[in-house]
Length: 123
Image (cartoon, rainbow, N blue to C red; front, side):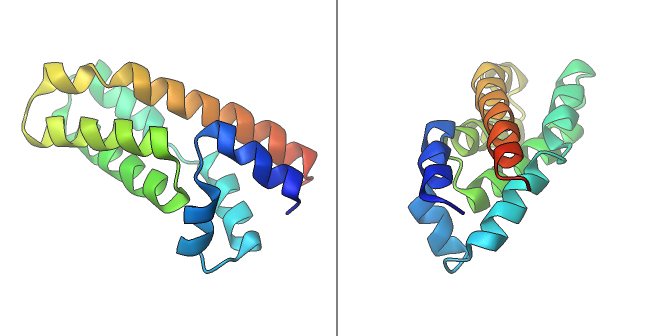
């Protein structure tokens, strides 16, 4: 992974130093996990849970996104998913919905950025 690659992760909301600590400095593992996020369907599942008013589906998907974002050190996604998870855990649907814009913005910024970066790295 190039220094250029690392420098372009930060604007996506990724705390690179924290992620590398979590992954024992394995750049290869970090890149592989970042690529897997692009195939992760939990964001779409979370939206489906909200669309269908299915609390359990929305909660499980938001909770999983929180874990994935935490492991990748994607701070904005983690914060939005964490806040949403806590609202859903408490059964506060309306408050949880207020976190959808932040979750969507963080997810879209991350996926667009990763798609471009990983394509440039020929992953």
